[in-house]
Each structure stands twice: as C-alpha cells, then as structure tokens.
Amino acid sequence: MSGAAQSFSGNLKKAVAGIRRINLDGLRWRVFDAKGQVLGRLASQISTVVQGKDKPTYTPNRDDGDMCIVLNAKDICVTGRKLTDKYYRIEIVN
Image (tube, rainbow, N blue to C red; front, top):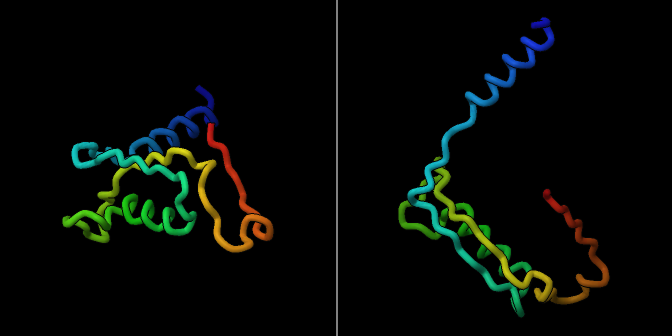
C-alpha cells in the first residue's frame, strides 16, 4: 500500500473512532403540523424539542433532544411583509 493510501486509511480510522454512539432509548419522534402555524413560533417550539429543554431531565451538557418531523411545511404562515421582502434560503439534503 502506498504512503498516501495508508495516510487516508489512518485518518478515516481516527474519524470513525471519534464518532460517538447515539443512544436511541430515550428519544421520541415528534410530529408537528405546520398548516396555519406562524413560522417563528413553530421554529421556537421545534428548537425547544430538538434541544431537549421540554424534558424534566434536561441538562445543558447532554444531547437529550427528540427527533422532529414537520408536516405541511408549504402551508406555513409568515406574518408582516416577510413573504415579499425577506429572502429565505432553501437547502435540500440528499
């Protein structure tokens, strides 16, 4: 094996070793229906759930947040003139 291939293999092993295992025992899937909801208020609710701040066992140094699914995101309400004046960046993850 060449030196470059060994270096890549070693870096990959270090990267994989650094990944921690995710404990799925305490996680829940939360479903939010965005139809008729105001964008900012729904975002703050989802943020609280993702961070785990809605759980009585919340501690800032642990990742105890739940997974979230947002349904009907195309029907969300935007207040004021944000829909016409503000630019929203959309990213699609494959």
